[in-house]
Length: 279
Image (cartoon, rainbow, N blue to C red; front, side, top):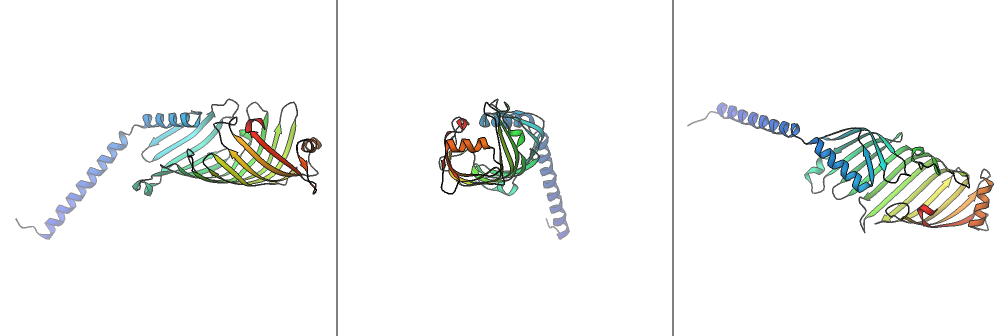
């Protein structure tokens, strides 16, 4: 049987249209049969188990195209740690990475009056940036430690969960930081603006530089932090050089004189060592 050019062209159009309709039907079937509730429960259970926290479900929608959530609250298992409200959260696939052996996703989040974005991949690699986060809601719920100020910028490159030899880099920039301790010895310190640079290998982190200015104390320092399961098992070893400013509370100066060594230039050398919970 002989076919003309027009007949072959018509048959190819019919075949193409059939393939398109079949693909659309298959795709629609997958979407409409997508087990959203089951996937949502798996994700929440994983977050709660791995993060040692509870997730209060707000409006969470999951589809093949990603996750959209609003008005979600995260409560750490430690009752002293505050609940963190998340105004909105979106997780979408990094589409080109889905063709590789290391697929990933992109996160956009609004919380604490600021924003956080991250790229996450199957191998655990994480690149995270945050800006304009209000720190006041992070004060301990028993009001023994009250923090105010803003995390103006944060960048983190790491692996989650941390592995024995995983490398990390971190930079924090904070502004107008005030810390008050509401205990038998009431203290309030204006730490001003703080910049911290650090790197890590596994659970061991090195603070390569710490600088505080524009507050009651001018501080520079460096040291090491060994991350544990919580603040009780997290160990810190920091060496700081502190120079009180005229605005510093005399009680703070007295405490520095008792717990540190005064240098020839009028500053104080202070060593912080031990569990983070005991500091």
